[in-house]
Image 1 (cartoon, rainbow, N blue to C red):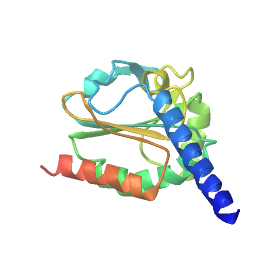
Image 2: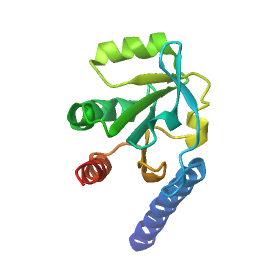
Image 3: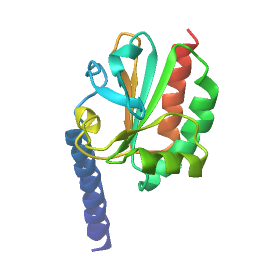
Length: 173
């Protein structure tokens, strides 16, 4: 009886992981190998840019929300291990978009946390909706030709280390 119960528990746990994985996959619109879609965004309040203005650079796009615990765990690592290291590299661009959040909230968040990287509004999810339907944080790394070369959902130190390794390998060619 105990063996049957243990087997059922393992099957239930495994099937829940598979369902969570498939939900995550269904929520992702863009994947590795896809082209980066065109979109406009405010780099500073009132100054509109198009992401195509950054073609020729390695671009890291992070999608987050200020209320998201995994996002708040990831962003200090983003600051220390990516932004501080590559902010002066002319071949690199980082854009962090706050899903459903505007300038005032994001600027207060940025000051409170001591972040120096660009944190930009995506008030109506118009940017987020080009990449995914749900789940944050998300990272998309785009090569100089506009192809997505790395994509992650959620935050874990191991996954973030993979992102760091791909960035380092790409910028240190």
